[in-house]
Length: 378
Image (cartoon, rainbow, N blue to C red; front, side):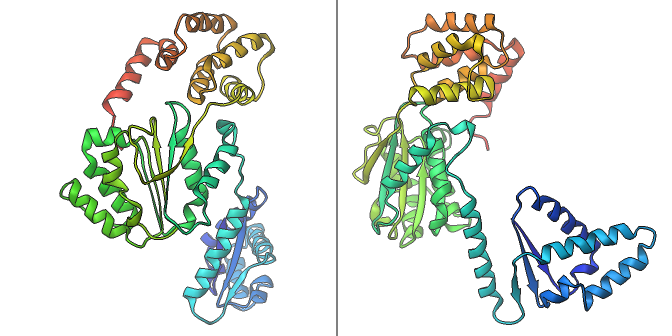
C-alpha cells in the first residue's frame, strides 16, 4: 500500500516526483495506491494547474536538455490522480486520518488470503478450527490451550491465528519459549516483556509476585490477545496470564504446551489438540522441502513414500528430512533411508540427527555453536 500526500508544493520536489514514478511502476505489480489531496483541488493536480503548473514550468527550464524526464513526471502524476482518492480541504484532521486508517485496514484485510504458501501445508483448516474455538463473538474472557508433541507446528499455528485476529484487540503480546527463557533469565523477564507489549512502555518488576500485581493492574478492563508459548508448569501460567478476572471482556489467551496436564489450569476452557498431517498433506510438505515443488521426482518416488510414511505426519520431521535430501543423489537418499530404518520410530530426536550427521565437520561445529552459545539471546 502506498499513500501519496499531494499538497500544494508536492510537484516542486524532484525527490517526490521520482518516488511517484517508482510507485506507478509498482502499481503494475499489484501495489495499491491511495492519493490524498491535502488542501488542493484534485482537478488542479490532475490538469497540473496553479502551483503544479508553476512547479513544472520551473522543472522545464532547469531540465531543457532532458525534457523526457519532466514528461515522465507529468504522466506519473496524471496516472495517480486518475485513481480514486481522498480530499481534505477543511474539517478536523484527526477524524480524516481515522477514516484513512479504516480504509487502508479494509483494503489490506480484503487482500489477506487463507492460503499460507508452500511452508504451511494443511494449516488452513487448523487456523479455522482454532478461530472457531476462540469464538470471537463471545463477550467472555477465554483461555484456549494448544497441546501436542514437539514438531507439530503448534507455535506456527498460534502465530497465524494471532496475525489474523490481533487487530481486533486493544493490545497484544506473544511470549515465546517460556520454559527456556524462565530457566535462563527468570519469569520476571517474561513479565516485563508482557508489560512492555501491553502498556507500550518499559515497566520494571521487583520479583515474580510484584510482577503478578503489576500485570493485573495493567490488564484490568483491557481487551487483549496474549499467546504464551512452550508453557511447562502451572506456576508459569499463574505468573504471566493469571486468571480470567484480570481481563476486559472479549480478551483471548492462547496457551501452547506439549502436555496440557503438566500446566493444567482451571482457567483453560478449551484444548485444541495439534495432530499430524494426513498422507496427502505430508507428501506435499515433504515434496516442497525435498524438490521445491508439490510432486516427487519419478526416480525417487518409492523412497519419497518411505520417508513420508516414516515421519508419521509430524511437520518438523517432514521438513527436516526433505531439506536434508534436497539436491542429493539417489544413492544418498538410499543411504539416508538405510540409516532411518535402524532407528526406533518413537525417537524423533534421533530422526533429526540424520540431518546433523550429513553436515561437514566445520558445519557441525558451527551448528553446535549456534545451538548452544546463542540460547536465550535476542
